[in-house]
Amino acid sequence: MQYDPIKNSFGSIIRGHSLFRKVFYKILGIFFLREWYVKRELRRILKHHHEPFVVYDAGCGFGQYSYYIAKKFPNISIVAVDLKEEYIRDCTEFFHSERLMNCQFGVEDLTSIAYVDTFDCIISIDVMEHIHDDQKVFHNFFRALKKGGILLITTPSLQGGSDVHTKGEESFIGEHARTGYGNDEMREKLRNAGFSDVSIQYTYGVWGMRAWRCGIKIPLMLVNKSKVFFAILPFYYCFIFPFFFVSMLIDYNMTKHSGAGLLVLAKKI
Image (cartoon, rainbow, N blue to C red; front, top):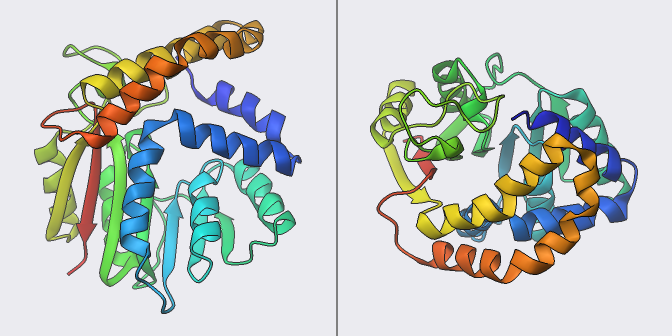
């Protein structure tokens, strides 16, 4: 399945409409479990920082994480980048309309960035699975971080990430360069890049994957077949939302020893 056409459809709906974009951010924050995990880590990382602190949002997409940081932590500066010019243009216009001046946007390729000791924190949310030369990007992230800086990554794991369950099976998302990462592989690549303090936890356990399939995968497949299904989605969610939300809540609060997603924290010592 190709995810970009669906994202482009949503982008065309919210483009130029501040209210629509804010509602869209709220919906993403409720329906995507990874946002629950990421925002919990961001609160933990950022809540005690009052001195100048710069976050690099590497692959910002629609800009929802930069918006969350800009609103909740106005003392923190954000540099948000993406490879797609239309995303950056739309985010720039929206943030200016909201008078959020602590965030700047730019079009950048993560494989060719050349920052040195610039950022206190880098976040890369569901981006690395799209990049073939991931080791180059990890090296770039290490160089771009200040000493003591933190890297936060989420990405599919090899335990059903991208909804892949057998060897050789293709990713559910056609734009993925890989189906996911194993713990050892991720740890080794980050250490090869220079990181010496790496911690990895699983996301999307059994309950999270149940929620993802009924709440995200099925609707995406329907919309990918025909935009007519957009009209059906509100009725569909009215039916499945209680199970969907409770399943995510269970996943978010339980200890997991396996899962289809990885949340990775690495520090530049």
